[in-house]
Length: 68
Length: 284
Image 1 (cartoon, each protein chain N blue to C red):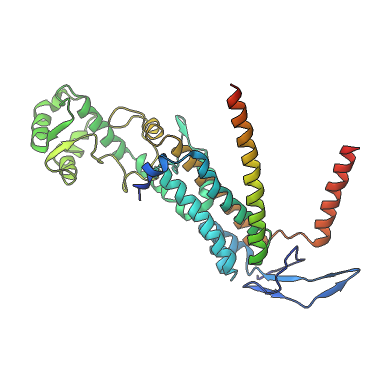
Image 2 (cartoon, chains in turn orange, green):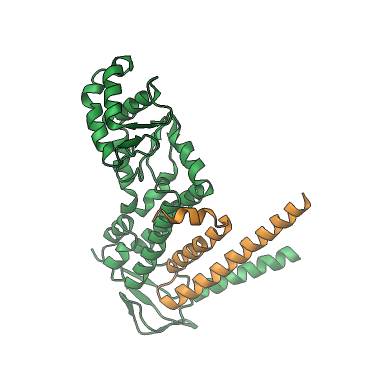
């Protein structure tokens, strides 16, 4: 199990946000709905929104870093 | 006392009732037709305690199996992924002046999976363990200690026998931790030649998982700094994952205790309207 650490260390840190956002969206959506259908559609919507927002922030920071 | 939570459905398109859920006949209310969902929360406080002790258990107790599975998989996967990222060291309980692990307050939100940290903390703070760490450190710092860190068990026993008087050991430490006993334990992990750097003698079982860092370990270094150096950004990411897992379980506990936070269609529409009005007002 600990053998995965070197593999994880080579992965870009930004990729770690994806599963975290998915898990947060699913749990948050599950606290608002009772049926599986709205839970998953709600989770998908909030995952997309969060990823788009994070992507915009990422691009902004990338552009700023190019200037410096 | 079993209790029911009756609440209006939000944008639930699905007509099929979820497990543990009773759907009553549509009831006409003023101009809008509203359905009511009757949710049997059984004994809410027991469900809340179960949800805290083990993620998803509260929902299983309420027979809301699907949601229980979602909470269990999401929260436990996040927690254990974080724990593995940090080599098992990101979750530990410590409240000493030199290192307060405030993150543990949130990590303990996952319940049982974070409890071993409390046991490890008690073991790591025990006088016996600290004495052993001190003893090994003093042996390593002694002038006879080989520079390459490698020595056979017999050699070290002999060296200790000759030089033990030069070690500034606290009274009784040699009697309690006789070199032979320590080496016998170490020897099981080596092929006769001992490398002090690799020996797990002062790592609490299993491999020091969830044990608090020793301010000055056997190598005379700050163990927390060593972990940060070894795992780099993964240590922080692992801390974040486990912390978020604990917080997510708090949401699950509330859900088990009071049912889902469903907004009615009217409330939802009112909310949307107020946002639109505010946006128009801001534009104007």
